[in-house]
Image (cartoon, rainbow, N blue to C red):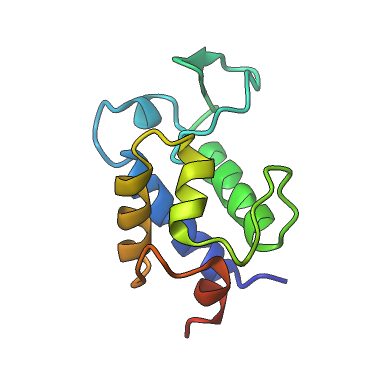
Length: 123
């Protein structure tokens, strides 16, 4: 089982990189801290981004995605040997991947060349 604190920290770092904490941003308006694109879950979509019921729902969904990634159960093909650069390309689809990777890694006290396994092993 993945440490829930690791999952939460990763989710917060992703939300920061996605601009969730910027008032009026697309992730903030959609209650979608991870800027997830998983289709309409009952609240519509905005510019391809899933709208969630509220911020709590959005955070739950993002933490779940982080858990799947770190548990290697994500259908998107993430591996523990992936660097934050590789995670960024998969997460963003190359859209601003470099900035995303640097933001997430720095928020976690790492470099963009560290791997997900490095993150799990970090004290």
